[in-house]
Image (cartoon, rainbow, N blue to C red; front, side, top):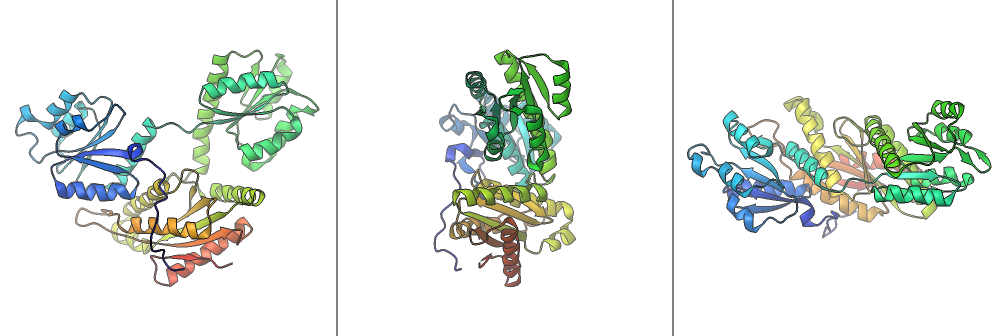
Length: 434
């Protein structure tokens, strides 16, 4: 397929969502930083000095990247740190850059409220890591999903209201025959289950849920109107995470549910996430791929799978060391996360091979999106040493449902298309033919 003449960005964020103020008098540095951060979906507002920020920043929390002048310590009274303290930027996140790694300047940056300090040439991947962490702190957290299995709809609605007011998404199931179907469709982070459901033994129902690999780690909190010690032991023996006695205070329910959810999410991230890139690992991605293929089949929707492989990656490791290779992998993983939509899925398949699952996306749209990301990646400058930057490329193979009907067919065909892309010159995208 020929490359499209125009590429529309898939990045679905407003400029204000990822705005970074860059304070520097070095126009070359401003141009470089703006170009590099733009690849990762950030928007740069350049101002020449701290005083100019007064007319620029709003009441919203923002990130300010301050490039320290070469001779910062020569005139303490007119120091940039003095100006920062005058403005009282307590609601802003401050990051400092400098040509020199000086302890005195580092201490002053900390005292001025700095959260990070980078020396030039800047490691863009490390800067993106910091910006991402600051962005997650000030943005809305991902809401938890709770499935409420309760025969009494009035009681279930009360629980649902409490959880929704706490920022969680809650779904109710009142008929035991529908529980497994709702678990498959809703993918809850936690299940609240009454111990007395009509026409079923909830202990057996919990056993059924625990038999399914995808649901084995979901926390289950049992609810009971009777403080039966034997039943409590049975519930915990089934892998239940807690046993609450009705009536339950709203504050108690919120605290217990959120505590179990937070702990579960942390533990689950260790099981399903790659330690270097924080992407889904091979096993977890395969599981998600199978789920999405089944969903697409039921809903008659489209789905695209892209496999990426960094060109000449072995050369990077052999020439500059594995630490440099790790930075490149992290850079590409961050780029994919920032440039894809929030509901698309990214994983590390192994080595330098990454995979993306583009939801409700046909093969032509997938090509356009991945080709834009390919261009962005080729323009990112990695610094394996301080001498000169390194630019890299990747090759990509794309397959799509319903052209390929199973998860295995999708992954095999995308892998074959990737092999063709690598063999025909690299730095290109090939679509698998069905």
